[in-house]
Length: 288
Length: 196
Image (cartoon, rainbow over all chains, first blue to last red; front, side, top):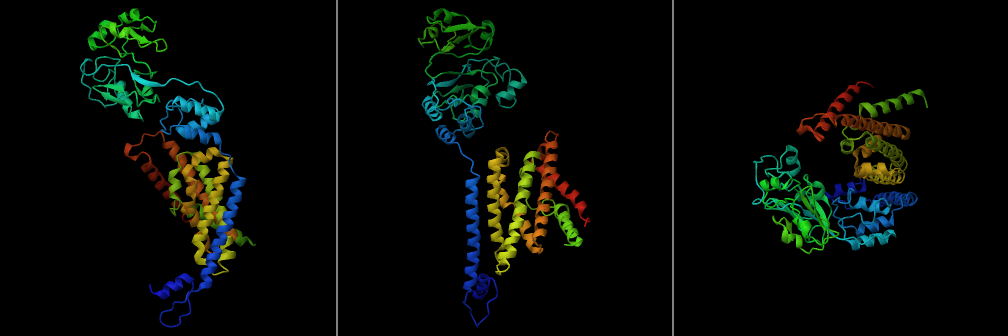
């Protein structure tokens, strides 16, 4: 396109052709076009400015502050769709200030300060898998060819390829839901990384066998079995399963461990981590 | 104002809403047509928002075109000016909906600001100008076109709601079956072709 044609285009109408290369540009038209567009823009801008003041929706200051304090992992552990929804629920008083299981208790206190309420500093918790039936200890009674997913496998019946009906299948559905890389399948059994765990509870909810529980971070002694079968039946399928012998119950000075349904259970409020039960356990299922 | 004029308006309205249906025969505004037609409620909300925006933008665009751009020989600025007006109108609609119907605001989500880039809106404004419609004709054309959009999106949403629990072949689930549905609807609307 020649210079002339460009000029015509810019001016918006045909310029009188003088001779040869015409460099004249219709300045008046350019200015007019600029003026008209800017005037329209200005008017609309003013109108929108006024409208936004008139139609302003007050944003809750608390909500913004609470949202800033929340971890922002959007894990859904609180039961809301994400941290934004959780902040909204806290701000309107629908949820408690310590509803976020991931945030530390310091953060809970800060959120409570924003909300003008108080919250008890809660103890840090972590998830714990109540099974140590690793490949060498738990017996195999079948070969499982189905999808490698605990929930799907549990729908088929049996317990993966393991003979024990209570233990960890080791397909790692909990690993998939963990947003913090805190749980891994090691040697056929899920193991929680205590330091990385934020107690969001997603793995607890996901496990079809319900063998993951929340325990205090400080606790050191756990019963690593979920089987409520009788001792004889447990022995058949796993060399390390709890046989419900009650030796631990007798050894405990603090009334902190009891056998119900052939399975020892620790009351973490009473347990002092003394380790007396660990010493007497014949199958070494109580672990430190 | 004679009866001839009203007949003319009626013809414009019917042809804009049905014969030249904005989505099904001109293929404008497909994005929101497919995007938020999974529930009748949000689809009709979107439809009414589009009616509001298109009608208002038809009025303002043809006013500005007739009284500012035309007398000043600035017709070539129409596209940019129309886009500015439409963008501002969408902003306004967004504010109004956010204030008076937060639920609808959440449901429409990102598609609300996307009305700005809904080519149906700009398309109507440009068609008005190209056909040399006066202001009343522009309003009727704009409203009827948007009503056509509302009809199309609500009908599609209704069909999609019913299809939700149907046993559809896996590879056709979601958008493929929606596109097939939209195609069949477009063919059905083709039946209006000889109406005027």
